[in-house]
Amino acid sequence: MTSSALRYEVALSAEQGHREYQEDAIAARFSSRRDIGYVVVADGMGGHEAGDVASRLVASSWSSVIDRRISETEATESTLADTLPLAAMEANAAIAAYINDKQASPDMGSTLLGTVFYENRFYWISIGDSPLYLFRDGQLIQLNEDHSMGPDIDRLVIEGVLKPEEARHHPDRNCLTSALMGAGISKVDCPEDPREVLPGDILLIASDGLQHLEPREIETVLKKHQNESCQDILDQIMLAIRDANVPDQDNTSVAVVALKPPANAAYAPHISN
Image (cartoon, rainbow, N blue to C red; front, side, top):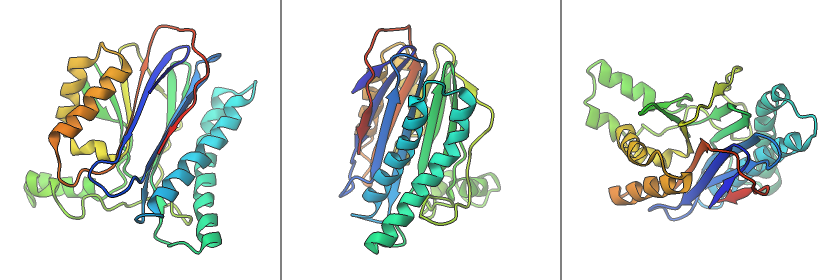
């Protein structure tokens, strides 16, 4: 499913993979009148009827706060940027309220990766291990912090303690070091300064299921299809994930965002979970 606003083209997908249930939620909104919009991805944890609820709560709560700000006629870039952490706190409070009201498992929670676009700049807030990638000039880089044990395990490879293959399949690799669980949040990545989006850039806003592909594999797909539509690029990424046929393939949610020539398009919000 694709939406194109004044400057941005966006495509979203959410697949269950080989898991028994879907614990990801992804949503986007881009205005047809202003160069402004957002994408949010939440990856739930806690098992059936916990992780799926948590991700929906996080995505919908965060979106509703940003929606209200975007809907304000005089919404400025600075007010939108300042709203990112406030929206995250609302999402965290929504989980706390659900746990309290439903006497739900205190282990339920979710990652959050929220991005806000203003003209040709974007901001993000990231809690957990959902990756934000920028593809520019043929190179793929991850912009946000990884709040999991993955970076610590990768350092053991550099130090010679582990072999690369051991690190890749380490049982603790995906253990989170920060998440929204209705309590204190140990780590937050929310830079004050924006990043610029250049013509030709491709942004991937995803859950960690995308990382069943190595960065070089993602980069190869993007190099081959970079001049195609966001929907075509997304289709090729999801095809590569399916072709990899990883036995324990996680839920995978991906948004592909790129600057495109202005187009007349109606306002179009998209939500998938």
